[in-house]
Image 1 (cartoon, rainbow, N blue to C red):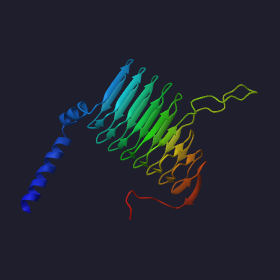
Image 2 (image 1 turned 180 degrees about the horizontal axis):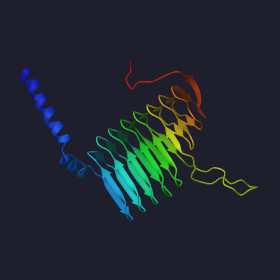
Image 3 (image 1 turned 90 degrees about the horizontal axis):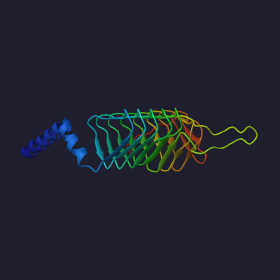
Image 4 (image 1 turned 45 degrees about the vertical axis):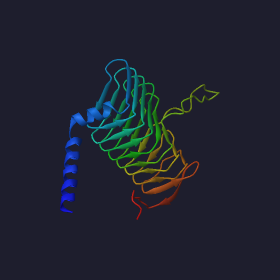
Length: 230
């Protein structure tokens, strides 16, 4: 039994050494079916001790920045950037799967806070100077759709003006999005809230509440949530 503990200790020690080694991450990312295509000038990709598996990065434009911080893991993800001056910032120790980040026009931003997990999402900032901000310790299920734009124009006949312009999306810390929920432009979801399965969120969600339905409405207040079942 003592020898078994010693063996486990040695294994953990070796693992910790590997995870601190730049060589480990270089080798892992080199042989993990990742692809990169960049057309343009002054585009930067910063990866600090991250693990990427089957990740595709495509950039067409100038002065764009992708920054993925230490301890983060991406699997089966796509980062697609069209235009100039966009920024994707993914903080420490995130776990993202089956997620697509989409940028269009210019100077858009998507930010994800540390320790956030996503099982599958399409996240788009696709009109100039619009942003999606996601806080720390969020938990998103699969089939999530978050977009700052309707992509196409709705025109007022009398004035000729477009009436469906982009709106920023701000999701606070420790927010749980249920499977197949959709977060539309201009929405703010405050800390510690939950969005139900299949909901379409068109307006703000207050902190410590549950919102559900199409369109989503607050169905419960004064709540919080845990990742663990208790």
